Length: 326
Image (cartoon, rainbow, N blue to C red; front, side, top):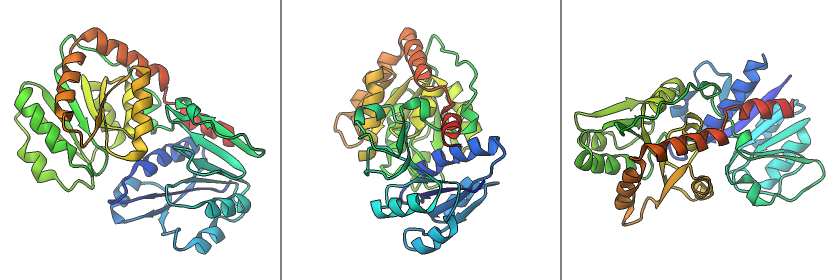
């Protein structure tokens, strides 16, 4: 069976697409089918792709080369914010089954399967079309294999540790600002800080660290899961990581750092799992974070949020997608 996964990722645009596509790669791999990744990206992504069958190709500029490669494939999965509708139409015509990973009803997709695992997906009112099947909602969110099975999270009486995670690049420079606030207001808390491969602000982060700060450089999924299980609270951007936090059951304070995260954070806020404090540029953001930490100090609030997160995300999304498309 010939399966291709077409996506993008780089220091400039982040790694969220690669991360969730890797979850689908693992679902196929689990069933002894090895897809081929075709990624429009830079050399920095190579560290994310160890032991993976992949090719780096600027397929937006070299469409004919890509189309020649995937022609007559059994399955082609695409996860992109950059490809236009004509690209999708051609891909749909060339392969037996095209699968489109979507977040916001970005296009009127052609024949194939549309997957939107977002918490808000069913509210988007996708138009029903002949030849198009929709897999919507967090039961279809693809998570990395390490999150398929998760041990029970212990909710402590007192908040002792907090996780800070802003993706692979922290493009809004949030980590040092939040670390400075925590250092000044919560010196006794253990601060687990995730440092991504494309961070440009490591010196500033180090400057705001204290003796209880644990800087975790370029962690793999196994290490991230360990930190989530250990941390009592998380402060996170509003992307794919929210679904991993929900899967583990980490009570989370969410900050929106990009337009494409807004539905995500609003949707999670509505479930009761997320304490959403607003956009990264808001003047009173730090005050809202402080208020949310105070609220989350109540052990019963944290127990409730842990339970809600795990009810919405069970980790099996990638396997469900595999079963439908194969």
